[in-house]
Length: 177
Image (cartoon, rainbow, N blue to C red; front, top):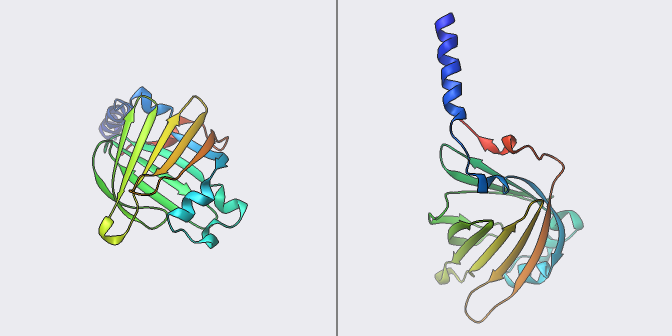
């Protein structure tokens, strides 16, 4: 059916017109942990069991950042040997998050240039701590600083990530419907 083929080609061309902002493209991809400073102490302060922190594979997660154009949402998947977490959000819009360590937070993520700031406000009535995660994206590296921001306690950790050789094709991290 020649008419049907023309309709499908036209629909496909409409999808390709939806562009991803250029400053998002350096974020997208698979990131592997290269170094970590004070991570065990930080997670211990959040109440994470020492069992969850055992072993090199557990402490070396892989993070995949992707973007869904039609929904204007980022997706962050974090995988370790024991756990996989997924976070979907729109920039600047508050959302309820169950963190990888099990806290229930009211969260917001902002992006200014190459700096993504993720604020996780813990529910004080449940005794949950608040944290801020600042991610600085560079050409082939990612620097992360996580800080407990609640009253009476200020502890942080730093982690450095490198772009994985698993996939550097940005089209793999853009989703179209």
